[in-house]
Length: 638
Image 1 (cartoon, one colour):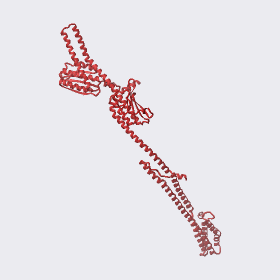
Image 2 (cartoon, one colour):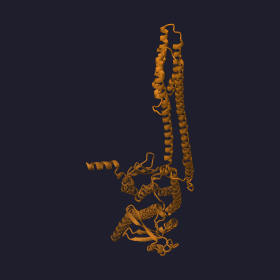
Image 3 (cartoon, one colour):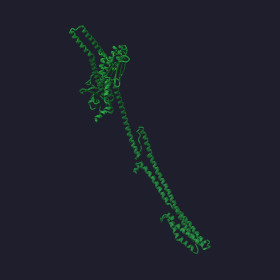
Image 4 (cartoon, helix red, strand yellow):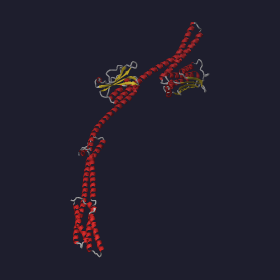
């Protein structure tokens, strides 16, 4: 019973088993009752035939007594018919159909009536019928009375058999009606149970499921009981409460994540907007990094932030920037800057238990440039804030590294410029001055020896020519270095040179320039520019040209420098022994490891061509390829 009270499935199964059991019992009883009535119809027919047989015996007796008996043969036929009817009656009275259809119980009225008929037949009527044909006469009245008595008993037996069969049929009908009523009751109870304990709870659960799908977790199940659906309803109520709590927690978490993402996006925007000033701010981190750090502190609710850099020589840590500080950093270089002193905060929190410090390395690769010290309240930093601070540290590291690299490049560039100027002065002006010094010493010796004025005049002429040449070289060097310093790159300097010689020559000077940017180093720039200026100067002085062209083109990893004109040209393809400009051009070409060719143009004029491989191209060509590296390693392994 407890199982039926606790389980709806058990009740449904019990109902189905009850209906099936009652149907099975009804079918079994019906089959049993049908089997019990088997033979009743045959018994009734046999009993009815006994009654007819008794009347036939009476008729045979009358024929034997009153029938025409002309011969003994006819009498014998009548007697034989009587004996046949008597034997038939005896056979039917004791037939199996009649015996088997009546119960063997002696107290059964049909069995008692059958035994009464059999006893009456055996003891009274059958002996009388056997003696009747042999006597002188037949007492028909006595036989009529006995047969009437027998027929009356037979009719009683038939009535009893009919009543017994009808009783069985009625019982069968009552049983069918009873089982139908019982099955109907069980079905009605099951339907009621299914409706109230299955259909209605399922509808209620479906409503709750639809509400839950709409994120409404307030409805609760009202199912009472201890069956499966009641348990499911209680579980659904618990699940709804937990879902409501979880959904509220998730909404709170989503809102916090949304705020966190908004803050992260704003922080990324601040760092992105500050990246240009940070990377292009030179060595002034106060004006480039301090505003960004203060905005990040406001967005991320942390701070103060302290930036310390390592001395690249003795690795000494130097604080260079600190937001919301009461005092200036120890190594502050601008006493008029107040970037660190804006809106100072109380710093007692740094020394108490209410704050923690996050130390981030400012490094590029394996090189440690400094540290970033970030103070925050005594609570765990979320992952996004840590990632933002890591990005900030990387950005500051990149900015510091770029600043140092720029300073190093500027220092190297300054040294290279000084080296170039010194070499140019040594190769041109210093040699001219040395020559003039030698001539002055020669003149002093001539004066000591009282040389003639004509001999001294020749030395004075050489001194005058040397001074003019030295002055011209000094002016060319000044012009060249002004062009280099005023215009970035070789192309700008060449354009100024072409414009200058166009005005000086009064003729058109064309420029064809096709060179990738930053291909030549400063030394190569100076040599190429000086070769072109020297060639244009020779054209201006000696060629008597009306047109000139300068071509600078890079192709096949080589730089082509060509200066040509339509002047009078050279007497032959070699420079004159004392042609100082062409000698300088050859010396510079040798310095560049280039091939110089000076020749006359077929259409008239002079063409000067220089072909050399720039240093950057030579370095690229010297790099081993992947195939060469594999071959080298394969050879070493073998």
